[in-house]
Image 1 (cartoon, helix red, strand yellow):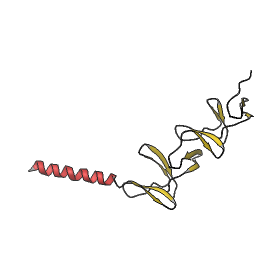
Image 2 (cartoon, rainbow, N blue to C red):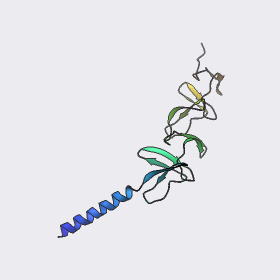
Image 3 (cartoon, rainbow, N blue to C red):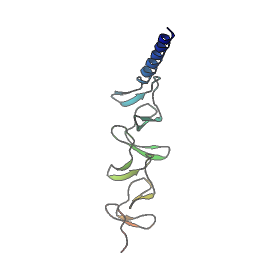
Image 4 (spheres, rainbow, N blue to C red):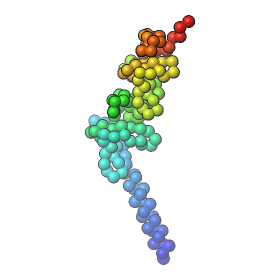
Length: 142
């Protein structure tokens, strides 16, 4: 008898855990996408890693899409809302987003220099005195 009671209690506990976690979900309306936590609250003004992908949510609770400054760093979120990493071509300029998602600024990434706004410099002299060509690549002096 006790085995049946314990088995039933275990089953009820498992159902409660799985049904609670199943409540966390994406929702969509004409304004955009938002995430509802398993407790019914919204991910508003915060970051969430969902199924291995980082997303950011505005204070209104909607998922961010596009380029945003967050805590002084430039981030980009693609059309699915996923945080960008690596090289991205945005509004006519190349940017490099580090593994943290923040754009590289005022530094070299390989043979390419990213300026103060994060955009790759082209056809110019970098702040540290090196020449970069039309493709942004460093041109070594002969």
